Length: 260
Image 1 (tube, helix red, strand yellow):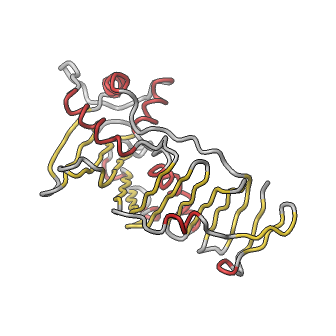
Image 2 (cartoon, helix red, strand yellow; image 1 turned 180 degrees about the vertical axis):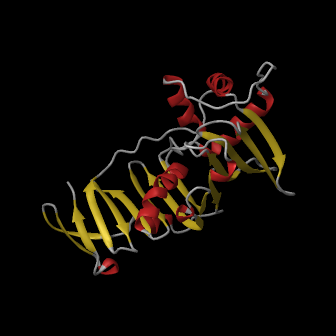
């Protein structure tokens, strides 16, 4: 259980503090070093639909995380076609960020970065890891429009929009033959363009053309996060001496591991 959470924790932070598996991050890396990709031969000139691309950029404004204050909650699901042990369904997720202080929870794990400490709690293992506080470097979801067009051409992505239901649409960047990320999609409200969810479909690096082995990560946003202030003031530890801590009553019986 612990390993499974560790393997998907980067996805939770990705959804909150920069979406590390986002198209922008992937494209930035590929701009520095060409990405090997398996693509079907084409005879037509690659054309970017700039109208849909501008629409995507407008919708993605909800996903800009270079802000001082962020409050997010929702459900995270992962389906790994090559390793079912990594699968999770509708795992509760919360993230609150206030400047350099943040609190996040994913399933049975909690993370608090405050007062110079980074605290990771595994409720399943009843262990608390304490280290020095971390500086959060947020990353926006999409680069500027010209850079995005350039990278889409380089990576041979197409942009698609389709209807999900009466109130929701889905817009995506798609390359079913890409060796890393085949699809990056945003679900949004038709009326106000607010983001309802994000989905990423990644290739199996050893068998990228086998769609059955793809890994899909879906995050669906909840409407509100009413207990944000309470979560930000979560007390996990009491300081006894330098690099020595005990737990508060809520975490009684947990092993504290200090790595400064």
